[in-house]
Length: 384
Image (cartoon, rainbow, N blue to C red; front, side):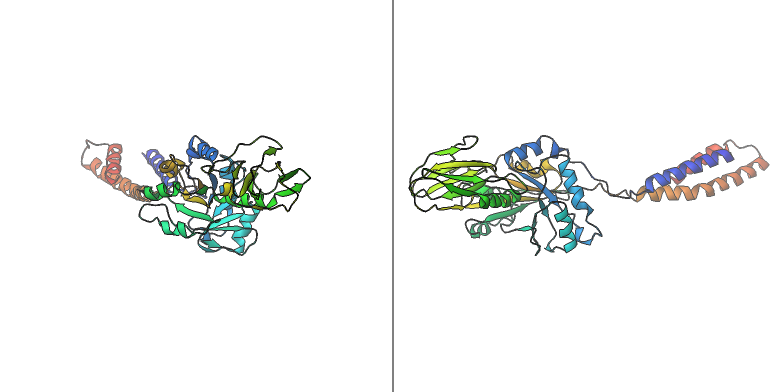
């Protein structure tokens, strides 16, 4: 019986260690939709994938989560149609510490937002200025108050704990009626840089605009050329791009003639386009919004842990999202099982001593119908 007791004690100890062991680092759930079906579909349509800081990031001793999130995305999906690496990072509200911005800069991030601030010139700060797209919280007047030529950045969270959040359908319908460019954080910023790099070279018959390569992504740039109200034929250096309509609100290369004004031309990086010169006068062109649209608009999907849940309400719209991905931690083990195991481990030796003493007493007064082994098993079951 001594050997049996030892085996049971060892088994109980192993059970206790297994259920009370806490992993050294956090374990995370895998969002299979990021790399399969939904993620690639959203990427092709023009969405962006960036990163979200954990809720408690301002209290953490290090910023390893910055590189961890970047690696998580890079192993599964490109950040944009225009670039591989993520450049947008959602940071906590308030001023960002130099240590945090240093970690972000080292990892290649260049855009932060949308309630945070920094004086670090390595970053563009995207401010939350359009409110939420959640039903009951949406504010159309905020969107209307943003001046032309600027970016409207709304936010969206699809799930809070066990509660699903509903979109504001009326607001979405109204947005779709506006002359807005549906874009993302990274696309907006890199398009601005690309547009500013476009140069012009003139000869006696033609004016050539060139967009050199540069920046973290190969995002096209847009200029407005004052053609003095006359339509002009365009000749591209590479592919011949089609004319754009006023309803084209997703960034792509092309041009749009506005008869009484001029031409909006969107040029891919590394390419050029020649326009027939009207006369030998002054060349007037300037960087502008894609396709001459009124404003840019994006929706930042915060704490995106499941792409199916976060995007399913908008699959039938041309709205574009900046998905700020956060890896969801697996809940920590419950303390119920460790407490139960501990109680059994403590109670077992006491029960065994009681059974042995009882068995010796019964041997003195007469045979027992129960063996010590069966009593041990029953006692353990009763305790458990």
